[in-house]
Image (cartoon, rainbow, N blue to C red; front, side):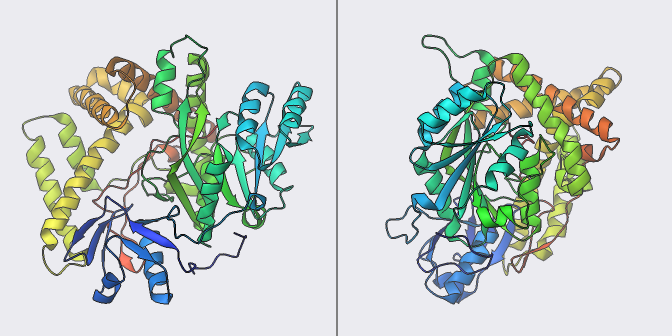
Length: 501
């Protein structure tokens, strides 16, 4: 695979598969799903090109259909098929590892990357000789900086030295082997893909015989960098709206050229900023949870919560540059009313939510490309949107707006009731989606997580003198892939905001 200019063509033999969460109707001609959720109606000929849920690119028509399904987050590439023509050579990829001291972690990181070409960027370490010794032991090249630039600046310094068509950024506290990075690099067979990231999973590095501590178990199960098990296109408003810079693979020429790589002066949120700038420029960014990378969890409560606070401070800078993309929630007034009513758990909650859902379904139905059953599909989407509204409002109360909620709770029974409901909703969702943490530990750890991140978010807003990163926004109906995108009700999946270390 070589670096290419961004075009829309897919190579012959490129395979895609419809996502498991896509609903089918009208004998498979209507597809409802994606992220944000949309409804796409295929022509009879287009549907005939699909073999079940699979499609192989063989000509212009199949390439066009594959592109439409991929861009709509209705399908994902199939890169591990035995007949796949996609090959990546070791020489196609160079790994950049930014580090400041951390020789033990660096040793573990570099050992996994053999036999790839690796550039270690020493970001003004206090003990540079130890970093050099570790790098030399694993055959890595060292580029030493005389001034500490932070991870973003260090990555850019390494990027300028890369001569291969592809570059991987791997932090020193991440362990991912060479074969996994090459698997990520296979996404480059799609010439529009500029950047791809794996699932970054928390890893406890306990001494032999020592049981992981409570906050380590929580961080391993619910790492801020773990974006879940559903892959797809990454963009604002989608289920995955960013990628952590802890582990990424991208096109060297593109990142080092017009994009300019990471923002040199940013020490937090630089990964989110890079992804959003790439998307704004018309490139594709993908998330592939079939590839996993291990990220060391923090070793103390102070460092764990301190990192959460630090992540939160980046929200204000993102809002200043990217506006409403950083909104902590996307809610229409109708869905906001529905969510708040359900959090109140009163006799009138269900009637209000039902009325709001019916209104949303009525407004949504005319935009669905259906000949029959339009109202049923609209009602299902409205119900999904109501559930997502409850989750978003619970997140606002517990995480983003907790200082306001704490001030109002002593004086408002409604706020107290909503807070208790929000905790219950949050715990049910967490225990359903995550394993390895007992309910009591999860309850305590999540509340501390929310307090730390929310405090950082408010601190950043105060320093910026702007509340923009705290304000939700209304959804819109936009054009995507030639079809109207259903976003007003179906719930734009948004992961909890987080930044890479």
